[in-house]
Image (cartoon, rainbow, N blue to C red; front, side):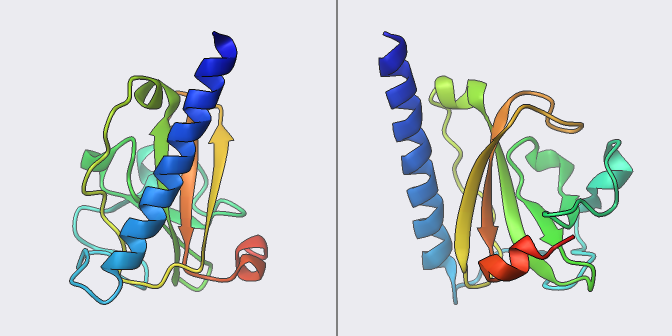
Length: 149
């Protein structure tokens, strides 16, 4: 029974990543979220995450994060490098929502070409305390993503 749950969870995760990649790819060139500026700060309802919760202004490996609090916990969290350029959109999907087969529809995306997608588990942190997965749509190469220190 436990193996079935693990396999089901992995299937849901794979489908989520494929769906996000497809959705992000189809949005390129279309009228995407206008508030997602390629330069920080993004404007609109987006707030610097470090002004909302106890996290540093710049998180090594992720960047400076902004989020519209109304979209929590999923986001997107917009990540900017030290030069203030948008490098990724991060979605934080709680495990409990995945286990309950919750749908996440019409997630906002930036009007940028996605270079690659990363996905990894996080046990929780300020702002999203429950265990969750980070799904990161990177707009920069893997080398530039790794170099974000």
